[in-house]
Amino acid sequence: MKYIIAIIKPHKLDEVREALANLGVSGMTVTEVKGFGRQKGQTEVYRGAEYTTNMVPKVKVEVACDSKIAGSVIEAIQAAAQTGSIGDGKIFVIDIERAVRIRTGETDDAAL
Image (cartoon, rainbow, N blue to C red; front, side):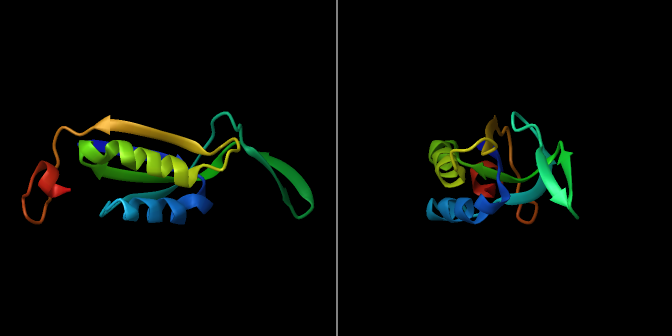
């Protein structure tokens, strides 16, 4: 099993969700986050004054899936989230040792 974490631009969330639904991904966790990378923040204008923020709003999408479809999930996220400009985000992949569905006690792939 794999745990895939994607940090993406907020306006790309619906496209990523649709791409994952088309693959049969049955669930995901979405969190609004802030951060920076090579983008180094952004400049905004508020009431006529320009100021720079070092934290950029992003969305974190977390998906647990079977290892067999992890490659397809990663490709779908990348294709749906890509704009071609700096700040498109990152995808991280982590191995899952064990998963348990609390309600039924099912474990591992059955719990996903």
